[in-house]
Length: 433
Image (cartoon, rainbow, N blue to C red; front, side):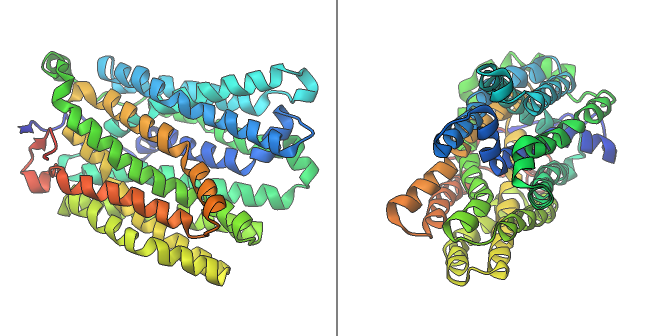
Protein backbone atom coordinates (compact mmCIF):
# COMPACT_ATOMS: atom_id res chain seq x y z
CA UNK A 1 0.00 0.00 0.00
CA UNK A 2 1.27 3.49 -0.76
CA UNK A 3 0.40 6.80 0.80
CA UNK A 4 0.82 10.43 -0.03
CA UNK A 5 4.01 12.44 0.20
CA UNK A 6 5.28 13.90 3.41
CA UNK A 7 4.20 17.40 4.33
CA UNK A 8 6.90 19.83 3.28
CA UNK A 9 6.21 23.44 4.33
CA UNK A 10 9.84 24.47 4.47
CA UNK A 11 11.68 23.55 1.31
CA UNK A 12 14.94 23.66 3.17
CA UNK A 13 16.32 24.53 6.57
CA UNK A 14 19.06 27.00 7.37
CA UNK A 15 22.21 25.52 8.89
CA UNK A 16 21.44 27.07 12.27
CA UNK A 17 17.99 25.48 12.28
CA UNK A 18 19.40 22.06 11.45
CA UNK A 19 21.88 22.51 14.28
CA UNK A 20 19.10 23.54 16.67
CA UNK A 21 16.98 20.52 15.79
CA UNK A 22 19.87 18.08 16.01
CA UNK A 23 21.40 19.53 19.19
CA UNK A 24 19.23 17.34 21.42
CA UNK A 25 20.38 14.16 19.71
CA UNK A 26 23.95 15.37 20.08
CA UNK A 27 23.45 15.92 23.81
CA UNK A 28 22.03 12.40 24.12
CA UNK A 29 25.23 10.72 22.96
CA UNK A 30 27.50 13.28 24.61
CA UNK A 31 25.80 12.63 27.93
CA UNK A 32 25.97 8.85 27.49
CA UNK A 33 29.71 8.79 26.86
CA UNK A 34 30.51 11.47 29.43
CA UNK A 35 28.72 9.49 32.13
CA UNK A 36 30.52 6.33 31.03
CA UNK A 37 33.91 8.05 31.10
CA UNK A 38 33.41 9.46 34.58
CA UNK A 39 31.29 6.73 36.18
CA UNK A 40 33.97 6.11 38.82
CA UNK A 41 34.16 9.79 39.81
CA UNK A 42 30.36 10.12 39.87
CA UNK A 43 30.14 7.03 42.06
CA UNK A 44 32.59 8.49 44.56
CA UNK A 45 30.70 11.80 44.66
CA UNK A 46 27.17 10.48 45.14
CA UNK A 47 27.58 6.89 46.33
CA UNK A 48 30.55 6.71 48.71
CA UNK A 49 31.44 3.23 49.86
CA UNK A 50 34.36 1.39 51.39
CA UNK A 51 34.06 -0.94 48.43
CA UNK A 52 34.98 0.93 45.20
CA UNK A 53 33.16 -1.70 43.14
CA UNK A 54 29.92 -1.09 45.03
CA UNK A 55 30.26 2.64 44.46
CA UNK A 56 30.80 2.12 40.74
CA UNK A 57 27.87 -0.28 40.46
CA UNK A 58 25.53 2.21 42.14
CA UNK A 59 26.73 4.88 39.75
CA UNK A 60 26.06 2.62 36.76
CA UNK A 61 22.65 1.68 38.17
CA UNK A 62 21.75 5.37 38.29
CA UNK A 63 22.94 5.68 34.69
CA UNK A 64 20.72 2.75 33.75
CA UNK A 65 17.70 4.37 35.42
CA UNK A 66 17.72 6.93 32.64
CA UNK A 67 17.11 4.19 30.08
CA UNK A 68 13.96 3.05 31.89
CA UNK A 69 12.19 6.40 31.49
CA UNK A 70 13.08 6.85 27.82
CA UNK A 71 10.06 4.91 26.45
CA UNK A 72 7.74 6.98 28.64
CA UNK A 73 9.24 10.18 27.29
CA UNK A 74 8.98 8.84 23.77
CA UNK A 75 5.29 8.12 24.30
CA UNK A 76 4.24 11.32 26.10
CA UNK A 77 6.39 13.94 24.36
CA UNK A 78 6.24 12.06 21.07
CA UNK A 79 2.44 12.04 21.10
CA UNK A 80 2.52 15.72 22.00
CA UNK A 81 4.49 16.22 18.79
CA UNK A 82 1.75 14.44 16.83
CA UNK A 83 -1.10 16.39 18.43
CA UNK A 84 0.26 19.89 19.12
CA UNK A 85 3.19 20.09 16.73
CA UNK A 86 6.82 19.07 16.41
CA UNK A 87 8.12 22.46 17.54
CA UNK A 88 6.54 22.62 21.05
CA UNK A 89 7.55 19.01 21.67
CA UNK A 90 11.16 19.77 20.77
CA UNK A 91 11.20 22.85 22.99
CA UNK A 92 9.82 20.89 25.95
CA UNK A 93 12.24 17.98 25.61
CA UNK A 94 15.25 20.27 25.24
CA UNK A 95 14.21 22.34 28.27
CA UNK A 96 13.88 19.23 30.44
CA UNK A 97 17.22 17.98 29.15
CA UNK A 98 18.91 21.22 30.16
CA UNK A 99 17.39 21.11 33.65
CA UNK A 100 18.58 17.54 34.13
CA UNK A 101 22.12 18.18 32.89
CA UNK A 102 22.48 21.28 35.03
CA UNK A 103 21.02 19.48 38.03
CA UNK A 104 23.49 16.60 37.81
CA UNK A 105 26.35 19.05 37.34
CA UNK A 106 25.48 21.15 40.39
CA UNK A 107 24.20 18.56 42.87
CA UNK A 108 26.50 18.63 45.93
CA UNK A 109 28.33 15.48 46.93
CA UNK A 110 27.22 12.96 49.53
CA UNK A 111 29.76 14.46 51.93
CA UNK A 112 27.96 17.81 51.72
CA UNK A 113 24.24 16.95 51.80
CA UNK A 114 24.13 13.27 52.71
CA UNK A 115 21.41 11.00 51.35
CA UNK A 116 19.89 13.88 49.37
CA UNK A 117 22.83 13.65 46.95
CA UNK A 118 22.09 10.18 45.51
CA UNK A 119 18.34 10.92 45.55
CA UNK A 120 18.88 14.05 43.45
CA UNK A 121 21.25 12.20 41.14
CA UNK A 122 18.66 9.50 40.46
CA UNK A 123 15.84 12.03 39.96
CA UNK A 124 17.84 14.14 37.52
CA UNK A 125 19.01 11.06 35.66
CA UNK A 126 15.45 9.74 35.23
CA UNK A 127 14.30 13.20 34.10
CA UNK A 128 17.12 13.22 31.60
CA UNK A 129 16.09 9.83 30.25
CA UNK A 130 12.48 11.02 29.93
CA UNK A 131 13.59 14.10 27.99
CA UNK A 132 15.91 12.16 25.70
CA UNK A 133 13.18 9.63 24.97
CA UNK A 134 10.89 12.46 23.91
CA UNK A 135 13.57 14.16 21.84
CA UNK A 136 14.26 11.61 19.12
CA UNK A 137 10.75 11.38 17.61
CA UNK A 138 9.98 15.07 17.01
CA UNK A 139 13.52 15.93 15.86
CA UNK A 140 13.83 13.05 13.41
CA UNK A 141 10.39 13.67 11.97
CA UNK A 142 10.93 17.42 11.75
CA UNK A 143 14.14 17.13 9.74
CA UNK A 144 12.57 14.70 7.28
CA UNK A 145 9.27 16.58 6.93
CA UNK A 146 11.09 19.88 6.37
CA UNK A 147 13.33 18.41 3.69
CA UNK A 148 12.65 18.39 -0.06
CA UNK A 149 11.40 14.85 -0.89
CA UNK A 150 14.53 14.00 -2.85
CA UNK A 151 16.78 14.99 0.08
CA UNK A 152 15.05 13.43 3.10
CA UNK A 153 17.86 10.95 3.66
CA UNK A 154 20.51 13.64 3.53
CA UNK A 155 18.67 15.88 5.99
CA UNK A 156 18.29 12.96 8.37
CA UNK A 157 21.98 12.27 7.85
CA UNK A 158 22.78 15.82 8.96
CA UNK A 159 20.95 15.14 12.20
CA UNK A 160 22.77 11.86 12.69
CA UNK A 161 26.10 13.54 11.92
CA UNK A 162 25.66 16.07 14.72
CA UNK A 163 24.71 13.21 17.03
CA UNK A 164 27.79 11.20 16.16
CA UNK A 165 29.92 14.33 16.21
CA UNK A 166 29.15 14.53 19.90
CA UNK A 167 30.89 11.17 20.31
CA UNK A 168 34.05 12.79 19.01
CA UNK A 169 33.57 15.82 21.27
CA UNK A 170 32.97 13.64 24.34
CA UNK A 171 36.15 11.71 23.59
CA UNK A 172 38.16 14.92 23.27
CA UNK A 173 36.72 16.30 26.52
CA UNK A 174 37.53 13.04 28.29
CA UNK A 175 41.12 13.04 27.00
CA UNK A 176 41.72 16.69 27.90
CA UNK A 177 40.27 16.54 31.41
CA UNK A 178 41.99 13.25 32.22
CA UNK A 179 45.37 14.63 31.15
CA UNK A 180 45.08 18.20 32.46
CA UNK A 181 43.58 17.55 35.90
CA UNK A 182 44.99 15.52 38.75
CA UNK A 183 43.01 12.47 39.93
CA UNK A 184 41.94 14.45 43.01
CA UNK A 185 40.72 17.38 40.93
CA UNK A 186 38.92 15.04 38.55
CA UNK A 187 37.08 13.47 41.50
CA UNK A 188 36.27 16.84 43.04
CA UNK A 189 35.06 18.95 40.14
CA UNK A 190 36.57 17.77 36.86
CA UNK A 191 33.71 15.48 35.88
CA UNK A 192 31.24 18.30 36.55
CA UNK A 193 32.96 20.46 33.94
CA UNK A 194 32.18 17.87 31.27
CA UNK A 195 28.45 17.98 32.10
CA UNK A 196 28.38 21.78 32.36
CA UNK A 197 29.85 22.02 28.86
CA UNK A 198 26.87 20.05 27.59
CA UNK A 199 24.37 22.13 29.56
CA UNK A 200 25.90 25.35 28.22
CA UNK A 201 24.55 24.80 24.70
CA UNK A 202 20.94 24.34 25.85
CA UNK A 203 19.99 28.07 25.99
CA UNK A 204 21.33 28.64 22.46
CA UNK A 205 19.50 25.58 21.19
CA UNK A 206 16.24 26.76 22.74
CA UNK A 207 16.54 30.22 21.21
CA UNK A 208 17.13 28.70 17.79
CA UNK A 209 14.26 26.22 18.13
CA UNK A 210 11.81 29.01 18.91
CA UNK A 211 12.38 30.39 15.39
CA UNK A 212 11.54 27.13 13.60
CA UNK A 213 8.54 26.78 11.31
CA UNK A 214 6.04 24.04 12.16
CA UNK A 215 5.87 21.00 9.86
CA UNK A 216 2.68 19.35 11.20
CA UNK A 217 -0.28 20.68 9.20
CA UNK A 218 -4.03 20.38 9.61
CA UNK A 219 -4.12 17.52 7.12
CA UNK A 220 -2.32 15.44 9.72
CA UNK A 221 -5.00 16.28 12.27
CA UNK A 222 -7.74 15.12 9.90
CA UNK A 223 -5.85 11.90 9.30
CA UNK A 224 -5.94 10.87 12.97
CA UNK A 225 -9.25 9.11 12.58
CA UNK A 226 -7.88 6.96 9.77
CA UNK A 227 -4.76 6.27 11.82
CA UNK A 228 -6.75 5.19 14.87
CA UNK A 229 -6.36 1.54 13.86
CA UNK A 230 -2.82 1.17 15.14
CA UNK A 231 -2.72 -2.50 14.18
CA UNK A 232 -2.45 -1.40 10.57
CA UNK A 233 1.04 -0.10 11.32
CA UNK A 234 2.13 -2.80 13.75
CA UNK A 235 4.54 -4.34 11.20
CA UNK A 236 6.35 -1.01 10.98
CA UNK A 237 6.72 -0.93 14.76
CA UNK A 238 7.91 -4.54 15.04
CA UNK A 239 10.34 -4.27 12.16
CA UNK A 240 11.49 -0.88 13.42
CA UNK A 241 12.34 -2.30 16.84
CA UNK A 242 14.39 -5.11 15.29
CA UNK A 243 16.20 -2.73 12.95
CA UNK A 244 17.05 -0.27 15.70
CA UNK A 245 18.00 -3.09 18.06
CA UNK A 246 20.61 -4.28 15.57
CA UNK A 247 21.88 -0.73 15.14
CA UNK A 248 21.85 -0.10 18.89
CA UNK A 249 23.85 -3.22 19.74
CA UNK A 250 26.49 -2.52 17.11
CA UNK A 251 26.63 1.17 18.02
CA UNK A 252 26.97 0.61 21.75
CA UNK A 253 29.48 -2.16 21.14
CA UNK A 254 31.55 0.46 19.33
CA UNK A 255 31.11 2.84 22.27
CA UNK A 256 32.43 0.03 24.47
CA UNK A 257 35.67 0.04 22.46
CA UNK A 258 37.30 2.41 24.96
CA UNK A 259 36.58 0.13 27.92
CA UNK A 260 37.48 -2.95 25.88
CA UNK A 261 40.87 -1.56 24.83
CA UNK A 262 41.73 -0.24 28.27
CA UNK A 263 40.46 -2.93 30.64
CA UNK A 264 40.36 -6.10 28.53
CA UNK A 265 43.43 -5.53 26.34
CA UNK A 266 45.25 -3.30 28.88
CA UNK A 267 46.05 -0.58 26.35
CA UNK A 268 46.92 2.92 27.57
CA UNK A 269 43.90 5.06 28.50
CA UNK A 270 44.88 7.86 26.13
CA UNK A 271 44.96 5.42 23.19
CA UNK A 272 41.62 3.97 24.28
CA UNK A 273 40.01 7.42 24.43
CA UNK A 274 41.52 8.15 21.04
CA UNK A 275 39.47 5.30 19.59
CA UNK A 276 36.32 7.17 20.62
CA UNK A 277 37.48 10.25 18.72
CA UNK A 278 38.21 8.10 15.65
CA UNK A 279 34.78 6.44 15.86
CA UNK A 280 32.97 9.76 16.15
CA UNK A 281 34.91 11.32 13.27
CA UNK A 282 34.35 8.35 10.97
CA UNK A 283 30.63 8.19 11.72
CA UNK A 284 30.08 11.89 10.99
CA UNK A 285 31.42 11.46 7.45
CA UNK A 286 29.56 8.18 6.94
CA UNK A 287 26.24 9.65 8.15
CA UNK A 288 26.34 12.33 5.48
CA UNK A 289 27.39 9.84 2.81
CA UNK A 290 24.66 7.41 3.85
CA UNK A 291 21.92 10.02 3.63
CA UNK A 292 23.10 11.10 0.19
CA UNK A 293 23.36 7.51 -1.04
CA UNK A 294 19.93 6.49 0.29
CA UNK A 295 18.32 9.38 -1.59
CA UNK A 296 19.87 8.15 -4.83
CA UNK A 297 19.80 4.37 -4.53
CA UNK A 298 17.04 3.73 -1.97
CA UNK A 299 16.91 2.98 1.75
CA UNK A 300 17.17 -0.82 1.49
CA UNK A 301 20.45 -1.27 -0.40
CA UNK A 302 22.16 1.37 1.73
CA UNK A 303 21.08 -0.50 4.86
CA UNK A 304 21.80 -4.02 3.64
CA UNK A 305 25.22 -3.75 1.97
CA UNK A 306 27.07 -2.10 4.90
CA UNK A 307 25.50 -4.39 7.51
CA UNK A 308 26.34 -7.56 5.58
CA UNK A 309 29.89 -6.24 5.16
CA UNK A 310 30.05 -5.45 8.87
CA UNK A 311 28.99 -9.01 9.71
CA UNK A 312 31.95 -10.26 7.68
CA UNK A 313 34.41 -7.74 9.13
CA UNK A 314 33.50 -7.66 12.83
CA UNK A 315 35.39 -10.77 13.95
CA UNK A 316 38.53 -10.08 11.87
CA UNK A 317 38.55 -6.48 13.16
CA UNK A 318 38.40 -7.54 16.82
CA UNK A 319 40.94 -10.28 16.10
CA UNK A 320 43.36 -7.71 14.71
CA UNK A 321 42.91 -5.47 17.76
CA UNK A 322 43.44 -8.28 20.27
CA UNK A 323 46.42 -9.68 18.33
CA UNK A 324 48.40 -6.51 17.58
CA UNK A 325 47.23 -4.34 20.54
CA UNK A 326 48.57 -1.19 18.92
CA UNK A 327 47.03 2.23 18.36
CA UNK A 328 47.11 1.74 14.59
CA UNK A 329 45.21 -1.56 14.78
CA UNK A 330 42.68 -0.13 17.24
CA UNK A 331 42.07 3.04 15.24
CA UNK A 332 41.86 1.26 11.87
CA UNK A 333 39.42 -1.38 13.10
CA UNK A 334 37.35 1.23 14.95
CA UNK A 335 37.13 3.44 11.85
CA UNK A 336 36.12 0.52 9.61
CA UNK A 337 33.33 -0.67 11.89
CA UNK A 338 32.16 2.88 12.59
CA UNK A 339 31.83 3.71 8.89
CA UNK A 340 29.86 0.53 8.19
CA UNK A 341 27.62 1.06 11.23
CA UNK A 342 26.76 4.64 10.26
CA UNK A 343 26.24 3.82 6.58
CA UNK A 344 23.74 1.07 7.36
CA UNK A 345 22.08 2.59 10.41
CA UNK A 346 21.28 6.11 9.24
CA UNK A 347 18.50 5.22 6.74
CA UNK A 348 16.52 3.28 9.36
CA UNK A 349 14.74 6.27 10.89
CA UNK A 350 14.16 7.73 7.43
CA UNK A 351 12.45 4.49 6.41
CA UNK A 352 10.30 4.48 9.56
CA UNK A 353 9.24 8.11 9.11
CA UNK A 354 8.26 7.46 5.49
CA UNK A 355 6.34 4.34 6.56
CA UNK A 356 4.11 6.08 9.13
CA UNK A 357 1.31 8.67 8.72
CA UNK A 358 1.92 12.18 10.17
CA UNK A 359 -0.35 11.53 13.16
CA UNK A 360 1.80 8.59 14.30
CA UNK A 361 5.31 9.59 13.26
CA UNK A 362 6.62 11.49 16.26
CA UNK A 363 5.16 9.24 18.94
CA UNK A 364 5.75 6.06 16.95
CA UNK A 365 9.41 6.71 16.27
CA UNK A 366 9.93 8.00 19.81
CA UNK A 367 8.56 4.82 21.39
CA UNK A 368 10.24 2.44 18.91
CA UNK A 369 13.61 4.13 19.32
CA UNK A 370 13.37 4.47 23.09
CA UNK A 371 12.32 0.85 23.58
CA UNK A 372 15.27 -0.31 21.50
CA UNK A 373 17.66 1.92 23.43
CA UNK A 374 16.19 0.96 26.82
CA UNK A 375 16.29 -2.80 26.23
CA UNK A 376 19.40 -3.16 24.10
CA UNK A 377 21.34 0.04 24.73
CA UNK A 378 21.06 -0.41 28.46
CA UNK A 379 22.25 -4.02 28.33
CA UNK A 380 24.77 -4.23 25.47
CA UNK A 381 27.85 -3.26 27.44
CA UNK A 382 26.78 -5.43 30.35
CA UNK A 383 26.24 -8.39 28.00
CA UNK A 384 29.63 -7.86 26.38
CA UNK A 385 31.41 -7.71 29.74
CA UNK A 386 29.50 -10.82 30.90
CA UNK A 387 30.32 -12.75 27.72
CA UNK A 388 34.01 -11.90 27.99
CA UNK A 389 34.05 -13.00 31.64
CA UNK A 390 32.07 -16.17 30.87
CA UNK A 391 34.02 -17.30 27.83
CA UNK A 392 37.37 -15.66 28.37
CA UNK A 393 37.23 -14.89 24.65
CA UNK A 394 38.19 -11.31 23.67
CA UNK A 395 36.22 -11.80 20.44
CA UNK A 396 32.91 -12.08 22.33
CA UNK A 397 31.89 -8.47 21.49
CA UNK A 398 32.30 -9.22 17.79
CA UNK A 399 30.14 -12.35 17.87
CA UNK A 400 27.42 -10.53 19.84
CA UNK A 401 27.52 -7.76 17.24
CA UNK A 402 27.28 -10.27 14.36
CA UNK A 403 24.19 -11.90 15.89
CA UNK A 404 22.43 -8.53 16.21
CA UNK A 405 23.41 -7.50 12.68
CA UNK A 406 22.05 -10.76 11.26
CA UNK A 407 18.63 -10.06 12.79
CA UNK A 408 18.66 -6.59 11.28
CA UNK A 409 19.61 -7.82 7.81
CA UNK A 410 16.76 -10.35 7.80
CA UNK A 411 14.26 -7.55 8.45
CA UNK A 412 15.91 -5.29 5.86
CA UNK A 413 15.27 -7.94 3.23
CA UNK A 414 11.58 -8.08 4.21
CA UNK A 415 10.62 -4.39 4.29
CA UNK A 416 9.42 -2.34 1.36
CA UNK A 417 11.39 0.46 -0.24
CA UNK A 418 10.19 3.98 0.65
CA UNK A 419 12.69 6.32 -1.04
CA UNK A 420 11.02 8.62 -3.61
CA UNK A 421 13.69 7.69 -6.18
CA UNK A 422 12.29 4.12 -6.08
CA UNK A 423 8.59 4.80 -5.44
CA UNK A 424 8.10 7.75 -7.76
CA UNK A 425 7.24 10.00 -4.83
CA UNK A 426 4.78 7.71 -3.05
CA UNK A 427 5.39 6.38 0.42
CA UNK A 428 5.14 2.75 1.41
CA UNK A 429 3.09 2.74 4.58
CA UNK A 430 3.56 -0.86 5.63
CA UNK A 431 6.42 -3.29 5.24
CA UNK A 432 6.00 -6.48 3.26
CA UNK A 433 6.47 -9.97 4.62
